[in-house]
Amino acid sequence: MTPMWYIVLATVLFSIGAVGVLIRRNAIVLFMCIELMLNAANLALVTFSRINGTLDGQIMAFFAMVVAAAEVVIGLAIIMLIFRTRRSASVDDANLLKY
Amino acid sequence: MTVSDVLLTAVGLVAVGAALAVVMTEHLVRAGLWLVVTLGAIAVEFLLLRAEFAAWVQVLIYVGAVVVLLLFAVMLTRAPIGPSPDLDRPLGPALLVGAGTGLGLSTLFVWVFADRQVAVPETGSAQRLGEAIFADWVLPFEVLSVLLLAALIGAIVLSRREGAS
Image 1 (cartoon, helix red, strand yellow):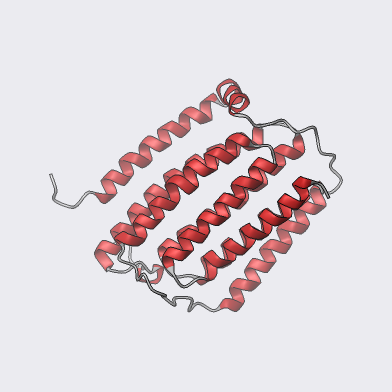
Image 2: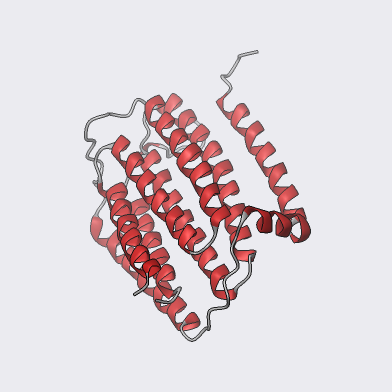
């Protein structure tokens, strides 16, 4: 079996994450779906690294993981702030820039 | 079929099934726990691709830190622990977009990489990745540390209560 199947798996996971972002309304589940898409992209990067026989893709995946960690911290802080002012974690309620 | 092929198929099926459960389940906490299964399965795929360092970083950062943060957020937003049926966006258009994305990306990548010969894999051990990062990728690495510092300060500023000294 070629590394192609890893790419197919990554695209399937990415599509599931995209569908999740489109159908869920809770901000935290939305976050989980975004993590799913980021992980699918990381899997594709590591597979490209395997296809090319170099380590560059793995290093990029490592950097993407660190950026994702920073993104989660900021995103959850924003979700908490919205929850504190609007008493709701649904993305449909976050429709104002200033309350 | 070699051992790694069987493992790829089995772990891939686990990852896809758990990802579907993350998207479809009505329990918020269960979605987080299914996410752990998906991320763990992807870590096993990294090991199968001989990216040891990426696999362990995945376990440490995602399974260890990100999921814990998400579960903390579930608790802090006082989300209902029971089922919360908030799947009330229409499923049809989303499925259309998802299928389009998946089919498009798959065809593109299969078309681009189908006839590539696979080079001899380099094992991504921590030592080799460290040598590569500190030889060729020093500048992105340092920029990343500044980004982490900015995220740290930003999170503190965001979550500070108004008027607190």
